[in-house]
Every structure is written in C-alpha cells, then in structure tokens.
Length: 343
Image: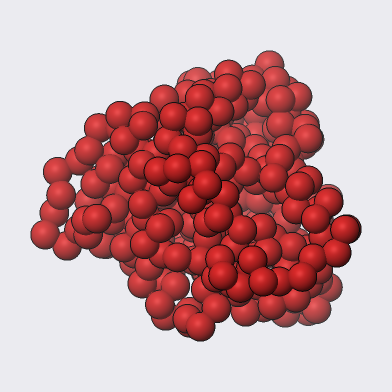
C-alpha cells in the first residue's frame, strides 16, 4: 500500500509561522527519503494556528527542496478563484517540476463571509458554481473547452507536454460525482467527516469517466494518524491534537498546545464527548495497530493509497510518527540528497 501526507503547517504554542513552515520543509524532505508517494499542503486563511495560506507558493518551495516526491495542494479553494488563473499557476509549476505536481481542489468557502469577500475582492461567488468551475479548470488544462465556450480561443500557458494531476477533495457523493465526471482523482476527507466515505468512494468508482489524461480512476482517503512506539505514548501525543480539534470547532486560538497543557486543561462533559467523537477521524497507536487499521480503511475505500495527517505539538515526535509508519508498511526509501534531513 502507498502512503502520502497532507500537511497544514500547524503552529505549536510558543512557536511561530516561520518555524512551522521550516518544519513543513523538513517533513517533506523526510517523506521523500522514507518513500511516501505525495506530499500535499493546505489552504487556510485568517487563522493563528495554520501557516499554509498559499499552496502554489509553498509547493514551489517544497518541490525545489526535493527531487522525486509528488507535491500538491490539498487543496486550492476553487470557488474563490478564476479557473484560468489556477490552471496557469499549476501548469507553470508542472513546467518547473515535470511529473511531480498535483492540483487538488475543493469546494470549501475557506471561511466566513468576510474572508470569502476578501478573497474574491468583494465579488462573492456562489458555491453552486463549483461543477462549472471544475469543468472550466479541466478544460483550460486540457485545452479542450467546448466550441461555444466564451474562452475557447484562450491559450493556457506555458505550453508543456505534461499536465499536473487533478484531484477533487470532498466529503460527499456529490463531490465524488464531480470528480468522476471530470476524469480527476478523488480524495475523501475522512479526517474531517468519516460518515460518508464508503458511499462516496463507491459513487466515484462506479461513475468514473476515463480520459486520455486519466484512463483509470485514482482514489485515496485522508485520515488523522498518531503513531508511537507504545500505545500509551501515542495516546499521550494525541491529546495535543484532541485539544487542537476542539479549539478549531469552538472558533478559538488554533495553535497546538503541549501534551502537558492538554492534560491540565479542564474539560466539560460535552468536551469529552466531542473528543471521543473526533477520535473516529483518527488512528492512534503502535505501528502494528496503525498499519492494521489503515489496511482496513484501504479496503473500505477500495484504494491502495492512504493519505495521513498528524497535527501534534512536538515536531520531532511528529516526524517519528511518520518514520514508524513508513517502516511498518516497508515503504521503499529513496536515496537521500545532501539537503535531506534524517532522524
């Protein structure tokens, strides 16, 4: 089974955005060494706890810092942008880093109404336009817009002989249907909502429309993972992620607190219930346990690729978690380059 990583460049309490972005660079270099398939970065705005605001910029930096691993967006908030501009951004990235770029897009509004208006310069777009925007995006990339399309004569530059892989990130059968209809890959966000994953995967696979660009369906699922040498250590490390998720849901500061602070934080009955519910989005444990559980997820989602995300306080323990996971699955390490990190 293949493993990939989604990283949001989370900021631990007492740290800052520069350090978080430095840690993302260290993590992608480690991921390449360990044999992970792809490394995606997120798009989040107006938050104190996540440093990744512009996937396109960060992708270029990370791809320059690596040599083989696929780098992509998880994902660009397509409803806020021009499909043409997104297509050209990612064709340029593909020109710079051939056969290494993934263009993941999502329907998320990216935040509240004020953030949406700021992103669109006051022209708030209707989320229901997503299917049309996705079709336009793929049309610009493939240069096969319908003959009656108003932008049919526009060229999408630069002209290159390869294309970025397009992926739709979603939480429903509707998103799966859009991915299938446009011959893109499909990523289910189990780490956000595990409830509809299996039926979304089935919808995508049964509806997929093959194309020259993507003759076969590609699907993965993204899941929170905390892996450690012992179950108790994994449970302790996961406490910082538990409190972070709780804070995100309450609209509070989203910096990740230490395990010690998490243990000392008083929780209401509702908080405890919510943390227990959020654990359904997470796999926590030893390498053998995590491997077995992810293999079950792989069968559920009918895929040989799982994407993992780990948002814990300690950056070294986070890298260790990914290392243990890679060892458990016996990923094939790549030859390390001089700029690569090790643990």
